[in-house]
Length: 481
Image 1 (spheres, helix red, strand yellow):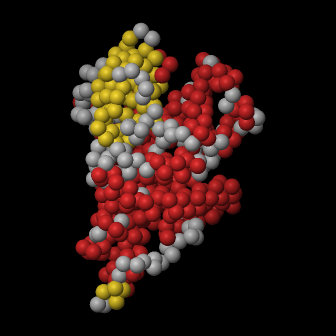
Image 2 (cartoon, rainbow, N blue to C red):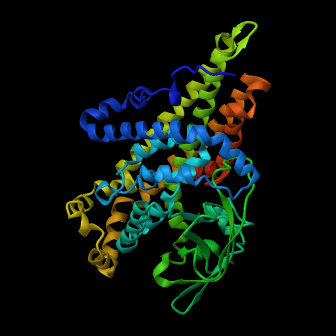
Image 3 (cartoon, rainbow, N blue to C red):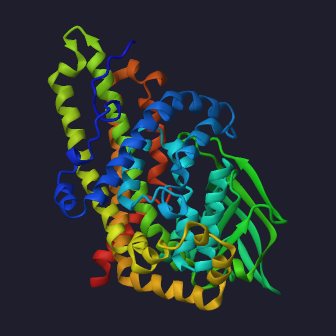
């Protein structure tokens, strides 16, 4: 079938951030640069999605079905040249300086084209988020320097976040579940650091990672009370990668087993001390769960736009498929749900800029540092100063004044709600469009069946939707009982 798609959504050259979210107009009057940056991010991401991600998404999906370890390096290098891999880093340091709002616009565009490729390009922010939870200045600056040097050299630098174990998935992300679980992984205190042993599974980027942020308890009998967070280079003795999983969807994104056989981690690479590991995890989840909901919304949008494209071209005995009232009602109903979740998603993103970790980039301290000469910002002398105990402690204190316990509770609540809403929307929409297009439309060449496969896991990772609903209840209602 030869398509002549209507110029809508991903298939339109027109940027529609302000059209879909007209309330941003008022904010734009006061902060025009903030809105302009988000619009520029959407424009750049849509152009890249249409020119690079979309044309190869189905072929990559096919190649990964044949070989789960296949990785589209050409696509990754193209994204790296555009600095999408370091988009969140400040412009002064060489990144794109994208706000959470700008990141949200890019995530929507990328995930509407291919969720697996989105993970390969943008999920590396796990590393930065993990470092900024404790906000030890030496660790943060060292990570930023490594990321920038790698980007400039065109070399990959991947991070992964290892939580899930063969016998403990969502339990590792839930305080109530962790009280009853018995983890298979543990960390043992040894001279100068810790020795890590056990298996982690279903780890995104696990087979590609150069560094892994890993959670393990010191006392497996009391995991919640003894959980710690470690920063592990994958070249460390005793670390190895197991199988790369064959998955139903998101095949372009590699998911792997990780083995730890008495891996030594020095005290300097303990990011959260025993007993603080769950708090560290919870703070990252307070951000990432909302973005997974946004990814789900992007998958739903991609499925819907493919359906609109197909329906506008498909001829039936009654005329075009899209001209039939039942199809129009169904499409409009899905559009209604999409608009509602999108509003919640961008509200969450702007709240991250106003109250959570992105607020750090707007603080006087960071803006003052940005006035330093470029060469000094990432110089060895500044790195040495940042690693000093007073500087590291000052960074942590400064950050904790911004992201308080109350702020964290609020973002767990809103992030969990958005995660469920966005990922349920992905499943509902990607299933419903297949009902509309029938057997022919479900053919692999149209991409809608891929959207369906990609959607399912979003309801499971970053905590199952059931666990997220329990978090939502506990944070909003349970505390009142």
